[in-house]
Image 1: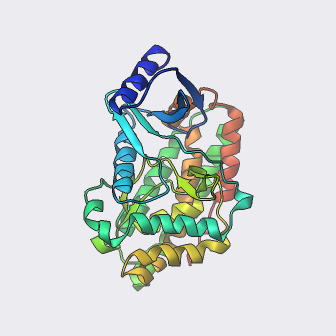
Image 2: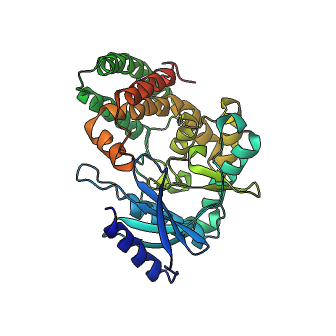
Image 3: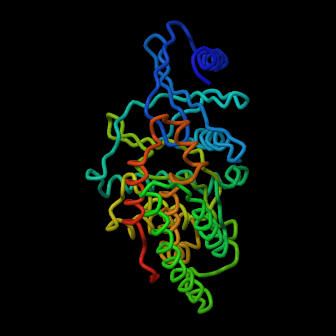
Length: 343
Protein backbone atom coordinates (compact mmCIF):
# COMPACT_ATOMS: atom_id res chain seq x y z
CA UNK A 1 0.00 0.00 0.00
CA UNK A 2 1.45 3.35 -1.00
CA UNK A 3 0.47 6.75 -2.32
CA UNK A 4 -3.24 7.32 -2.69
CA UNK A 5 -4.42 4.00 -1.17
CA UNK A 6 -2.31 4.69 1.94
CA UNK A 7 -3.62 8.24 2.24
CA UNK A 8 -7.19 7.04 1.78
CA UNK A 9 -6.74 4.37 4.44
CA UNK A 10 -5.27 6.78 6.97
CA UNK A 11 -7.90 9.43 6.20
CA UNK A 12 -10.60 6.83 6.82
CA UNK A 13 -9.05 5.91 10.18
CA UNK A 14 -8.85 9.58 11.16
CA UNK A 15 -12.52 10.09 10.35
CA UNK A 16 -13.55 6.95 12.24
CA UNK A 17 -11.62 8.18 15.29
CA UNK A 18 -13.32 11.59 15.06
CA UNK A 19 -10.04 13.35 14.30
CA UNK A 20 -9.57 16.25 11.89
CA UNK A 21 -7.98 15.35 8.58
CA UNK A 22 -7.43 18.85 7.21
CA UNK A 23 -3.98 19.74 5.88
CA UNK A 24 -3.04 16.09 6.11
CA UNK A 25 0.62 15.23 5.62
CA UNK A 26 2.06 11.74 5.89
CA UNK A 27 5.79 11.24 6.43
CA UNK A 28 7.54 7.88 6.48
CA UNK A 29 9.75 7.34 9.49
CA UNK A 30 12.10 4.72 10.86
CA UNK A 31 10.09 1.85 12.24
CA UNK A 32 10.74 -1.71 13.27
CA UNK A 33 12.12 -4.45 11.12
CA UNK A 34 8.70 -5.76 10.08
CA UNK A 35 6.24 -2.92 9.46
CA UNK A 36 6.05 0.51 7.86
CA UNK A 37 5.55 3.44 10.22
CA UNK A 38 4.30 6.91 9.31
CA UNK A 39 3.92 10.21 11.13
CA UNK A 40 0.55 11.74 10.31
CA UNK A 41 0.38 15.54 10.55
CA UNK A 42 -2.94 17.36 10.62
CA UNK A 43 -2.86 20.99 11.64
CA UNK A 44 -0.81 21.17 14.84
CA UNK A 45 -1.47 17.55 15.81
CA UNK A 46 0.57 14.41 15.09
CA UNK A 47 -0.37 10.75 15.10
CA UNK A 48 1.34 7.48 14.18
CA UNK A 49 0.06 5.11 11.51
CA UNK A 50 1.40 1.58 11.15
CA UNK A 51 1.05 -0.55 8.07
CA UNK A 52 1.61 -4.15 9.12
CA UNK A 53 3.48 -6.82 7.22
CA UNK A 54 1.28 -9.69 6.04
CA UNK A 55 2.29 -12.70 3.98
CA UNK A 56 0.97 -16.27 3.61
CA UNK A 57 4.26 -17.62 5.01
CA UNK A 58 3.85 -15.59 8.23
CA UNK A 59 0.70 -16.43 10.15
CA UNK A 60 1.16 -13.84 12.92
CA UNK A 61 -1.62 -11.25 13.17
CA UNK A 62 0.66 -8.41 14.25
CA UNK A 63 -2.03 -5.74 14.14
CA UNK A 64 -4.49 -7.72 16.27
CA UNK A 65 -1.85 -8.58 18.89
CA UNK A 66 -0.58 -5.03 19.27
CA UNK A 67 -4.01 -3.41 19.26
CA UNK A 68 -5.44 -5.88 21.80
CA UNK A 69 -2.48 -5.38 24.13
CA UNK A 70 -2.73 -1.58 23.97
CA UNK A 71 -6.49 -1.65 24.56
CA UNK A 72 -5.87 -3.87 27.57
CA UNK A 73 -3.15 -1.58 28.96
CA UNK A 74 -5.19 1.59 28.48
CA UNK A 75 -8.36 0.02 29.92
CA UNK A 76 -6.35 -1.01 32.99
CA UNK A 77 -5.00 2.53 33.41
CA UNK A 78 -1.39 1.48 32.77
CA UNK A 79 0.80 4.48 31.92
CA UNK A 80 3.67 4.41 29.47
CA UNK A 81 2.00 3.24 26.25
CA UNK A 82 0.58 5.07 23.21
CA UNK A 83 -3.21 5.08 23.05
CA UNK A 84 -4.72 3.01 20.22
CA UNK A 85 -7.09 5.21 18.23
CA UNK A 86 -8.49 3.12 15.37
CA UNK A 87 -7.57 0.12 13.26
CA UNK A 88 -8.55 -1.32 9.90
CA UNK A 89 -7.74 -5.06 9.91
CA UNK A 90 -8.73 -5.43 6.26
CA UNK A 91 -6.11 -2.89 5.15
CA UNK A 92 -3.62 -3.87 7.83
CA UNK A 93 -3.52 -0.30 9.15
CA UNK A 94 -3.74 1.13 12.66
CA UNK A 95 -3.63 4.64 14.09
CA UNK A 96 -1.98 5.46 17.42
CA UNK A 97 -1.16 8.36 19.68
CA UNK A 98 2.11 10.10 18.78
CA UNK A 99 4.70 9.96 21.56
CA UNK A 100 7.08 12.89 21.79
CA UNK A 101 10.34 11.41 23.00
CA UNK A 102 13.90 10.42 22.20
CA UNK A 103 15.57 7.07 21.78
CA UNK A 104 17.52 5.70 24.76
CA UNK A 105 21.13 4.75 24.07
CA UNK A 106 22.72 1.71 25.65
CA UNK A 107 25.53 3.75 27.23
CA UNK A 108 22.94 5.84 29.07
CA UNK A 109 21.11 2.90 30.63
CA UNK A 110 21.11 2.66 34.40
CA UNK A 111 19.17 1.21 37.30
CA UNK A 112 16.41 3.82 37.01
CA UNK A 113 15.67 2.75 33.42
CA UNK A 114 15.59 -0.94 34.31
CA UNK A 115 13.37 -0.19 37.31
CA UNK A 116 10.98 1.69 35.01
CA UNK A 117 10.78 -1.35 32.73
CA UNK A 118 10.15 -3.63 35.71
CA UNK A 119 7.45 -1.27 37.02
CA UNK A 120 5.77 -1.34 33.63
CA UNK A 121 5.77 -5.14 33.63
CA UNK A 122 4.30 -5.23 37.14
CA UNK A 123 1.63 -2.69 36.14
CA UNK A 124 0.35 -4.83 33.27
CA UNK A 125 0.39 -7.87 35.57
CA UNK A 126 -1.32 -6.32 38.59
CA UNK A 127 -3.57 -8.81 40.44
CA UNK A 128 -6.62 -6.64 39.78
CA UNK A 129 -6.22 -7.20 36.03
CA UNK A 130 -5.85 -10.99 36.02
CA UNK A 131 -9.39 -11.53 34.74
CA UNK A 132 -8.93 -9.15 31.81
CA UNK A 133 -5.47 -10.57 31.11
CA UNK A 134 -6.89 -14.07 30.71
CA UNK A 135 -8.77 -12.84 27.64
CA UNK A 136 -5.59 -11.80 25.84
CA UNK A 137 -4.23 -14.21 23.22
CA UNK A 138 -1.01 -16.10 23.76
CA UNK A 139 2.10 -14.18 22.80
CA UNK A 140 3.96 -14.97 19.62
CA UNK A 141 5.88 -18.22 20.15
CA UNK A 142 4.50 -18.46 23.69
CA UNK A 143 5.85 -21.42 25.65
CA UNK A 144 4.68 -22.61 29.08
CA UNK A 145 6.80 -25.75 29.52
CA UNK A 146 10.58 -26.17 29.32
CA UNK A 147 10.23 -28.82 26.63
CA UNK A 148 8.36 -26.27 24.49
CA UNK A 149 11.18 -23.74 24.82
CA UNK A 150 13.70 -26.39 23.80
CA UNK A 151 11.59 -27.53 20.86
CA UNK A 152 11.25 -23.95 19.64
CA UNK A 153 15.02 -23.48 19.52
CA UNK A 154 15.39 -26.88 17.83
CA UNK A 155 13.01 -25.66 15.14
CA UNK A 156 14.80 -22.34 14.68
CA UNK A 157 18.17 -24.06 14.29
CA UNK A 158 16.70 -26.49 11.78
CA UNK A 159 15.38 -23.56 9.74
CA UNK A 160 18.93 -22.29 9.39
CA UNK A 161 19.65 -25.29 7.18
CA UNK A 162 17.85 -23.16 4.59
CA UNK A 163 20.78 -20.73 4.20
CA UNK A 164 21.49 -21.07 0.49
CA UNK A 165 23.36 -17.96 -0.62
CA UNK A 166 26.57 -18.18 -2.63
CA UNK A 167 28.38 -15.13 -1.20
CA UNK A 168 31.34 -15.71 1.16
CA UNK A 169 29.25 -14.42 4.07
CA UNK A 170 26.64 -17.11 3.39
CA UNK A 171 29.30 -19.82 3.58
CA UNK A 172 30.58 -18.30 6.83
CA UNK A 173 27.04 -18.33 8.21
CA UNK A 174 26.65 -22.03 7.38
CA UNK A 175 29.90 -22.75 9.24
CA UNK A 176 28.67 -20.79 12.25
CA UNK A 177 25.40 -22.71 12.28
CA UNK A 178 27.44 -25.88 12.79
CA UNK A 179 29.09 -24.35 15.86
CA UNK A 180 25.72 -23.08 17.08
CA UNK A 181 24.23 -26.55 16.77
CA UNK A 182 27.06 -28.11 18.78
CA UNK A 183 26.79 -25.43 21.48
CA UNK A 184 23.05 -25.90 21.66
CA UNK A 185 23.44 -29.65 22.13
CA UNK A 186 25.49 -28.98 25.29
CA UNK A 187 22.96 -26.47 26.63
CA UNK A 188 20.11 -28.86 25.95
CA UNK A 189 21.87 -31.70 27.77
CA UNK A 190 22.60 -29.53 30.80
CA UNK A 191 18.99 -28.36 31.08
CA UNK A 192 17.74 -31.93 30.68
CA UNK A 193 20.00 -32.94 33.57
CA UNK A 194 18.60 -30.08 35.68
CA UNK A 195 15.09 -31.35 34.96
CA UNK A 196 16.04 -34.92 35.85
CA UNK A 197 17.62 -33.73 39.12
CA UNK A 198 14.52 -31.71 40.04
CA UNK A 199 16.52 -28.51 40.33
CA UNK A 200 14.58 -25.37 41.35
CA UNK A 201 12.93 -23.77 38.34
CA UNK A 202 13.37 -26.89 36.21
CA UNK A 203 9.81 -28.20 36.28
CA UNK A 204 9.05 -29.59 32.84
CA UNK A 205 5.29 -29.38 33.24
CA UNK A 206 3.35 -26.42 31.92
CA UNK A 207 3.23 -23.35 34.16
CA UNK A 208 0.00 -22.89 36.07
CA UNK A 209 -2.08 -19.77 35.43
CA UNK A 210 -0.74 -17.98 38.50
CA UNK A 211 2.80 -18.26 37.11
CA UNK A 212 1.98 -17.06 33.60
CA UNK A 213 2.28 -13.39 32.74
CA UNK A 214 1.14 -10.75 30.30
CA UNK A 215 4.30 -10.19 28.29
CA UNK A 216 5.01 -7.08 26.20
CA UNK A 217 7.24 -9.38 24.10
CA UNK A 218 10.20 -7.95 22.19
CA UNK A 219 10.48 -5.92 25.40
CA UNK A 220 13.44 -3.61 25.84
CA UNK A 221 14.80 -0.14 25.32
CA UNK A 222 15.02 -0.61 21.55
CA UNK A 223 11.23 -0.25 21.76
CA UNK A 224 11.08 2.72 24.11
CA UNK A 225 11.10 6.51 24.06
CA UNK A 226 12.01 8.84 26.91
CA UNK A 227 9.65 11.79 27.11
CA UNK A 228 10.84 15.33 27.90
CA UNK A 229 9.65 14.87 31.52
CA UNK A 230 11.93 11.82 31.88
CA UNK A 231 9.19 9.18 31.88
CA UNK A 232 9.55 6.20 29.56
CA UNK A 233 6.98 5.08 27.03
CA UNK A 234 7.19 1.54 25.67
CA UNK A 235 6.26 0.76 22.07
CA UNK A 236 5.75 -2.03 19.54
CA UNK A 237 3.67 -4.85 20.97
CA UNK A 238 2.98 -6.90 17.86
CA UNK A 239 4.19 -10.07 19.59
CA UNK A 240 2.54 -9.36 22.98
CA UNK A 241 0.24 -11.66 24.93
CA UNK A 242 0.25 -14.30 27.68
CA UNK A 243 3.59 -16.04 28.09
CA UNK A 244 6.25 -17.51 30.37
CA UNK A 245 7.83 -14.73 32.49
CA UNK A 246 11.23 -16.44 32.11
CA UNK A 247 10.98 -15.81 28.37
CA UNK A 248 10.11 -12.15 28.94
CA UNK A 249 13.17 -11.64 31.17
CA UNK A 250 15.43 -13.76 28.99
CA UNK A 251 14.55 -11.78 25.88
CA UNK A 252 14.90 -8.49 27.79
CA UNK A 253 18.58 -9.19 28.44
CA UNK A 254 19.33 -11.14 25.25
CA UNK A 255 18.06 -8.58 22.74
CA UNK A 256 21.11 -7.14 20.97
CA UNK A 257 19.74 -3.77 19.81
CA UNK A 258 20.10 -1.79 23.07
CA UNK A 259 21.92 -4.17 25.45
CA UNK A 260 20.86 -3.96 29.10
CA UNK A 261 23.77 -4.15 31.59
CA UNK A 262 24.10 -7.69 32.93
CA UNK A 263 24.91 -6.20 36.34
CA UNK A 264 21.24 -5.23 36.62
CA UNK A 265 19.92 -8.71 35.80
CA UNK A 266 19.35 -9.90 39.39
CA UNK A 267 17.64 -6.62 40.25
CA UNK A 268 15.26 -6.89 37.29
CA UNK A 269 14.47 -10.56 37.89
CA UNK A 270 13.73 -10.04 41.58
CA UNK A 271 11.51 -7.05 40.80
CA UNK A 272 9.51 -8.57 37.95
CA UNK A 273 8.99 -12.07 39.32
CA UNK A 274 7.32 -10.55 42.37
CA UNK A 275 4.13 -10.41 40.28
CA UNK A 276 3.58 -14.06 41.24
CA UNK A 277 3.35 -15.90 44.55
CA UNK A 278 5.69 -18.38 42.85
CA UNK A 279 8.41 -15.74 42.49
CA UNK A 280 11.39 -17.72 43.84
CA UNK A 281 10.79 -20.64 41.48
CA UNK A 282 10.22 -18.30 38.53
CA UNK A 283 13.49 -16.49 39.28
CA UNK A 284 15.34 -19.82 39.29
CA UNK A 285 13.60 -20.80 36.05
CA UNK A 286 14.64 -17.50 34.45
CA UNK A 287 18.31 -18.05 35.30
CA UNK A 288 18.22 -21.69 34.18
CA UNK A 289 16.72 -20.86 30.78
CA UNK A 290 18.89 -17.82 30.02
CA UNK A 291 21.16 -19.74 27.59
CA UNK A 292 18.07 -20.98 25.76
CA UNK A 293 17.01 -17.45 24.94
CA UNK A 294 20.52 -16.35 23.99
CA UNK A 295 20.65 -19.28 21.57
CA UNK A 296 17.26 -18.31 20.19
CA UNK A 297 18.55 -14.79 19.60
CA UNK A 298 21.55 -16.16 17.72
CA UNK A 299 19.02 -17.78 15.40
CA UNK A 300 16.96 -14.59 15.09
CA UNK A 301 20.06 -12.60 14.18
CA UNK A 302 20.65 -15.04 11.33
CA UNK A 303 17.13 -14.61 9.96
CA UNK A 304 18.62 -12.16 7.45
CA UNK A 305 19.98 -15.21 5.61
CA UNK A 306 16.52 -16.77 5.19
CA UNK A 307 14.20 -15.79 2.32
CA UNK A 308 11.02 -15.20 4.37
CA UNK A 309 12.68 -12.93 6.92
CA UNK A 310 14.56 -11.04 4.23
CA UNK A 311 11.25 -10.37 2.49
CA UNK A 312 9.83 -8.94 5.72
CA UNK A 313 12.84 -6.65 6.14
CA UNK A 314 12.48 -5.38 2.57
CA UNK A 315 8.82 -4.60 3.26
CA UNK A 316 9.76 -2.40 6.23
CA UNK A 317 12.88 -0.95 4.60
CA UNK A 318 13.50 -1.56 0.88
CA UNK A 319 17.22 -0.85 1.37
CA UNK A 320 17.73 -3.36 4.18
CA UNK A 321 18.76 -6.38 2.09
CA UNK A 322 22.51 -6.40 1.50
CA UNK A 323 25.57 -8.58 1.93
CA UNK A 324 27.01 -5.98 4.33
CA UNK A 325 23.97 -6.25 6.58
CA UNK A 326 24.19 -10.03 6.62
CA UNK A 327 27.84 -9.77 7.69
CA UNK A 328 26.87 -7.44 10.57
CA UNK A 329 24.17 -9.85 11.71
CA UNK A 330 26.57 -12.80 11.57
CA UNK A 331 29.11 -10.97 13.73
CA UNK A 332 26.39 -10.12 16.25
CA UNK A 333 25.36 -13.78 16.37
CA UNK A 334 28.96 -14.81 17.04
CA UNK A 335 29.17 -12.36 19.94
CA UNK A 336 25.84 -13.64 21.26
CA UNK A 337 26.79 -17.31 21.32
CA UNK A 338 26.24 -18.56 24.89
CA UNK A 339 28.47 -20.89 26.87
CA UNK A 340 27.17 -24.46 26.98
CA UNK A 341 27.14 -24.58 30.77
CA UNK A 342 23.95 -23.53 32.56
CA UNK A 343 23.73 -21.83 35.94
